[in-house]
Amino acid sequence: MEKTLLIIKPDAVERSLIGEIIRRIESARLKIVNLRYMKMTKSVAEDFYEVHRGKPFYDELTNFMSSGAIVPMVVMGDNAISGIRELIGKTNPAEAHPGTIRYDLAVSHTKNSVHASDSPANAEREIHFFFPKEQV
Ligand code: CMP
Image (cartoon, rainbow, N blue to C red; front, top):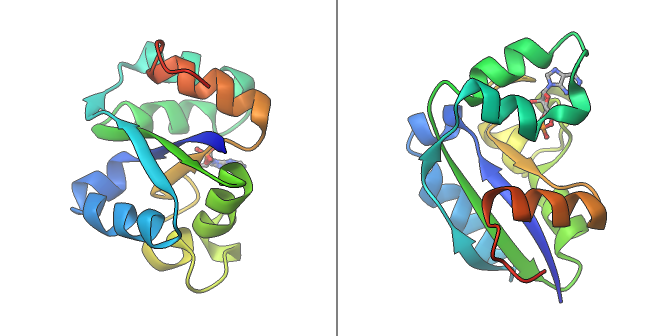
């Protein structure tokens, strides 16, 4: 069993898509084992996306991620990291395949509805960022 972190981003929370996204995760036979509803400050968003500091989209990304409520969650299952990445589709919704969360629901490259960890090391870091007591 593997664990990964998924965040429902402000654009999806704003459009009442929490239930729809959770339904897709559960339909893929993945389990949600921890979940929060919260708002990040700009400085917390900057820490979370530290790896992108200095990139042209960093300011827009961290402004957006601190603009409204988010729903971070820990998702568990066999190959959960790659499974969730397949379910959400490519980062840019314009390049995502039909049937993926980003193709079906996202608005733009920044307002792309969800984030998910892309490797075991990042999953561990990102899970602990939002859920410090979670066993990974
Ligand atoms: P996410 O999976 O949250 O990880 C970093 C985010 O930066 C990404 O989704 C996008 O929302 C956002 N982003 C905006 N522009 C770009 C870009 N040109 N390349 C990569 N990520 C981008």
